[in-house]
Amino acid sequence: MFRIATWNVNSLRVRLPQVLAWLEAERPDVLALQETKLTDDEFPFDAFTPYGYHAVCAGQKTYNGVALITRTPVQNPLTGFPGCDDPQRRVLFAAVGEVDVLNLYVPNGAEVGSDKFEYKLWWLGKLRAFVAELLRGGRPLVVLGDFNIAPEAIDVHDPARWEGKVLFSEPERAEFRRLLDLGLVDCFRLLNGEPGQYTWWDYRAFAFRRNMGLRIDHVLASRDLAARCRTCEIHRDVRKAERPSDHVPVLAGFELGPGTPGTA
DNA sequence: ATGGTTGCAACGCAA
Image 1 (cartoon, rainbow, N blue to C red):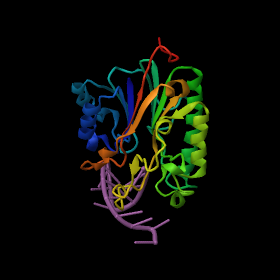
Image 2: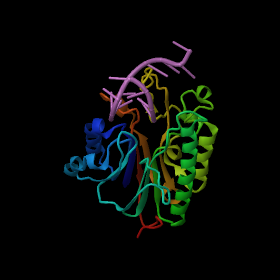
Image 3: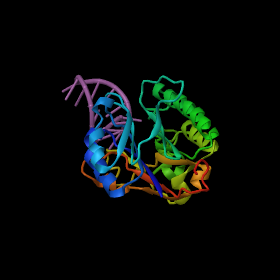
Image 4: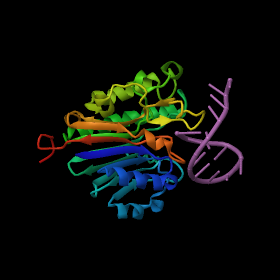
């Protein structure tokens, strides 16, 4: 089984002990991190070595930052969308064996109508172009990360209250659907139709205790690969830790084999 | 009720 996870850690410096403990407990093939908030020279490469993991990162000072923690070294890592010179480090692409992996930290968007919201929509357009290009290559593809979009009403604790708000507004959800329409499958919803399944809870107002969350962290797979998806779990208990991230890991498992396009 | 908390870094900004 090929197991791959996403986790917005909201500062890898603060969360490193939790990340190492989770890695040791779960032993995934790939862990995609977002909001590391570290420059590349500050990245704790050596911390992962004793656990048998390699790391590549695309970081910046204070904000954003993405990384791929892998059991085998990645091939051809790429930072950012081709042809875009965005200084914000939100994209890390690499091949991990036979599978292409695209790790994303989608812009938050701040408030509908703001400049940051326009940037989010612009960015999602660039993402769509890149995913379309990758899918044309025909290799198995996983697109995962913090999408900062709750796709459907079932993914929101109080859809009426979130109507038109950032993370759930129609333009963002339309971009998410357009991404799926290219040929990607939401692995969690492929296997689980339950409501109340969230990946992020605000730090404020006891949101976690009241399960007032959103499902905004996703593992998407190209259609042929998604047909081989056997598990997709939200690791909700991680939010109960001391000093938790506001997001929890999402871990998916794929049964790779001779029938997978792009594999031997 | 535009509240509340966290992280970074510097008393504001982004989430």
